Length: 344
Ligand code: SF4
Ligand code: SF4
Image 1 (cartoon, helix red, strand yellow):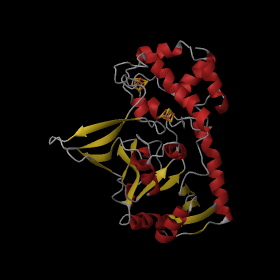
Image 2 (cartoon, rainbow, N blue to C red):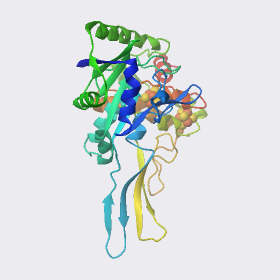
Image 3 (cartoon, protein in one colour):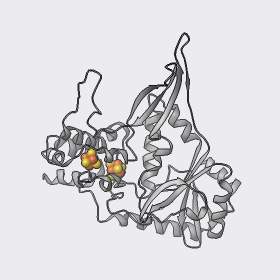
Image 4 (tube, rainbow, N blue to C red):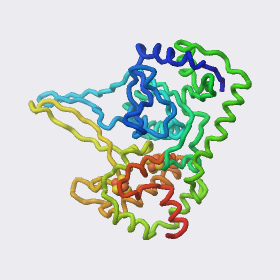
């Protein structure tokens, strides 16, 4: 990996130069203490000292509502795919969200390659940045997602007088060469970067898993019949917020909508969530996961077992968004895993 340095004074001009060439999205403070990924109108809006955003950058690759195709009916039936995408730079993505995007990249390129997702990913350049403070619910250290060495085009580490930029891909290198004033990082700067990154996992010392990462699937298998799922179900509203804020949840529902002229329409997809009551309901009315406790168990098994068994890494990156979005405060995976371990 190569390392470049951008002096602090040269960073806003870098963003300014990108703006006419592509959409530039970064982390902005939405209301006091709450952050979001949103379009930057000026470099001064970018905040790299945030804990977590309300939603992950997943929304740019798998939008909450996305038209997949348009069709016409009548004597001649026709349909046309809608592959809406444009050049995009996303700045300030934390390691846990980079890991989540890398996981979605694998899933959407798997057996049924999803061109809508893949086109948006191809058109995007991702600029990561270090976590500088943790959200109260995050447990990234336990999920191996406090730091990353891949999954980005460029990655920024603030070393005070400038940013050390790790170059992860050719796309990142080209972006830097074309739009930024940078120089090769010195040995001392790269060493300072490593020193900063070594301390990051300790930001998460308060929230840790009591089960090692690779032993979570076994823990869940052993406790599949735990009464804890029934206890949580009594408090759950089935609102689906824990699914909708999750950077690794990717389920969607596909619907067709006819225009009023009844001769044309569109097919679109919407985010769906396994905690919602109708998630597993099929056309005959049968609901395969009608019971709330079963839906909670299913979500937790997706986070700590099923995805791991298929891809070798968990479907949870420890961002803590689900825990902060859950009104009755019952969605926190680390608490659930630890309580299962304790047998409570
Ligand atoms: S399950 Fe919760 S903590 Fe884990 S990745 Fe999803 S939102 Fe983040
Ligand atoms: S956010 Fe909480 S209340 Fe809502 S579905 Fe998830 S666990 Fe249930």
